[in-house]
Image (cartoon, rainbow, N blue to C red; front, side, top):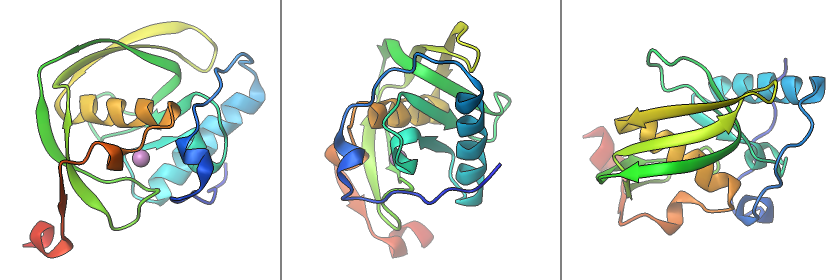
Length: 157
Ligand code: CO
């Protein structure tokens, strides 16, 4: 496994919709492993493929809860309910944080690294991470949804 460089804004790859994955092969497995290692090395809780320069519908998430490592291939939000507003950041925007409204509950359909479909339901912080990463795969960045930016002193205070 290797830690890959993270693409930062305003690289245009971050705002382009990603292509669906069609080949569930060893290359995909290696990419997922590298993305997970890259995410951990950057101290992140989620990473989408365009953030490492790959315009494909692939994301990894680990918010440190009982779900552990989550791998999402071709994910789609199939249900969303409620609203939560909380502070969000992104590895492609180092040092930038803002309050973003998100659905409180989401149900996501995706495929695993072998191509097998699964459905994942989540609330709270995991639901937020899922929405943030799936947005990345559509070329949508959290900055387009921020209702209020936070300054660092406020967060540390
Ligand atoms: Co992000």
